[in-house]
Image 1 (cartoon, helix red, strand yellow):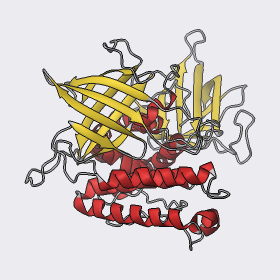
Image 2 (cartoon, helix red, strand yellow):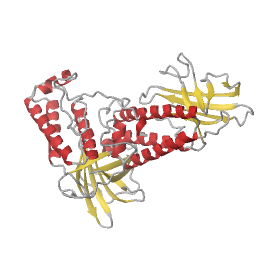
Image 3 (cartoon, helix red, strand yellow):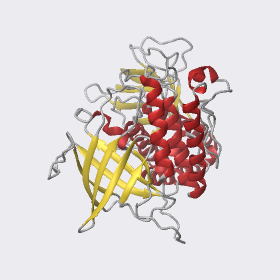
Image 4 (cartoon, helix red, strand yellow):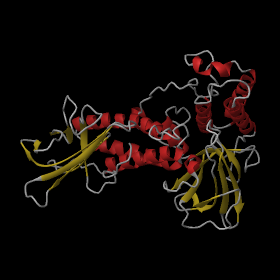
Length: 466
């Protein structure tokens, strides 16, 4: 599947990173220099910035290429925090200036104490957003103490602390219920019905942590930023010299040079990497089953879906619709949306119904879905419902539904509904050149859909922001 990945260029407020190099610090001479005028004239901040860059370079050279890539991503998150509301300040005592200094000092301490190799999960782990301390206990249990420590500009933003006892499961992850640590005190027993579940697994020389939680429980609001890759600190279960390669579940593409945010996330997470490999296999199998014209349509759809993964991940990690905390890194939400996209794509490809005759059934494409079924109460009539979206744009979504019947290859209805037409094994949806009344903020619901067998888990009825 890697041959179809589209490398979309993102120009952030920090310099573009290249494999094997440290993340650049503040852009004092480039096109975004005006954003950092105050910072770039502060001698103490510049000294700390140079020290962080030097330590980051040393740390990257000491680790394997995949861990180095993930460390560059982690550094980019640090620079996102600094390059946001921190960027301008007035005077040495301005809290925003003190916030930059504290953040850089915290980062320097982490990089200077980072171990180059971890052969087990016991010990201390850190990243740009928090820490995880893991202690071995009897019977294969590990106790995890996790804390968010991202120094965002909003000083009132609450911190979060969790504790969990995790044990190896059949899926290869260490997992268990987690409890919130309140006022520095941990409950003696972690309830099995806790709204939080913590999962952990080694990936390259990082500890991958995924925290699933009930979104309606706000007692520990920044809990979702626990989902991330953590790096081993000196004192963890490390080996100075080892011929055993670090555990790594590799996706269908090369991780060491991954630049797009979705690719980096897939490389960071063994579960996502496994799904990526399965998608590549299912995609190649589908191409061999389809006629040449339909296969070319699927190639186009796959390219568009791959490109959309980055937009989907980026839109969730800094959610524009969350106006109170958009600046935070919503890493669990972003990971979950990417997981859903991979799961749904795999279900679509494995359940292609290329031998379908007629229009009735489930139809799926990279940016739209449609279901057509006989109306049980009206013989000869059909019920059709669907929706279309622009990935990453939370304001652009169409929903349409109507009763009608097929006549002359078209869906006839008294309601406003996109035009349908069969093309090879695909179904084209809409050809309007003007904005239809049922579709706000989108000029046309035009899309190309593929037949998918009933029962495929593609999330047709959900209303999530894609």
